[in-house]
Image (cartoon, rainbow, N blue to C red; front, side):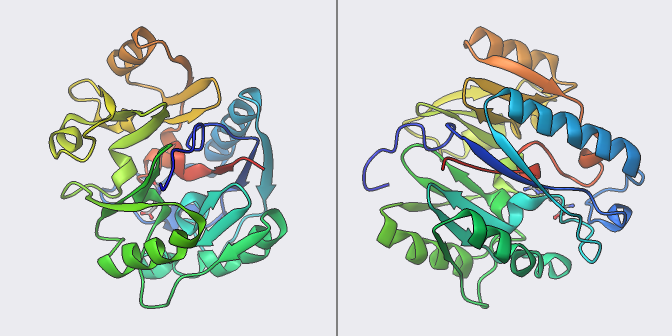
Length: 266
Ligand code: CIR
């Protein structure tokens, strides 16, 4: 950013979520681990919303979008700052329309909503907002035109965009990292080794626990997916208060903690 924005990446008062669609089993996935169970997904989604609320966030729940099986992963359709939202351009053809479907809700919640050109592709999962910059990973979903368009859209508001590389074979940049606030990040060793976190304090996920990296810092807590005890121990030792959530059904569609909400202050 032009200036540091203390707390921008982890101090939130509101979140927008979307109920999983009954068509969820048609969602995209890199590897077939079986279809998610809708009833269990809904239960886990409710627990996720409750954890956000317990961390001090007022949660809006939008109705399901049956035409978009992946629309529960609402983070990919927009990027939020205090008073400002960017309607993104999801890179998967089946998800492209999610952003337009969300637009009325963004307009209701934010004083200003900006769009991006049709030529751009960019998923929210590739965008890591820290307190000093917006780091965007090139990936199979996010292209150079998408990153350039986002940089141009955010420049007037004083937010600086920096380009990074999402590791090969990884869905999104934030599949491999999370902001912890205060210039600290949680990251996989493979992403940390790529050098994009120079100047940050990095807590690395434990070996074999790469999927733990898609955590979220929400006010005074870090929400972490269940099943990663050694990474949990590292975060605990580093002084973070943890809330551990079972999101097995989202994980079957390559979804994690960040993608299930849009979090913002305002
Ligand atoms: C997809 O492939 O687009 C969805 N099945 C999962 C999206 C997860 N989004 C995210 O981590 N930001």
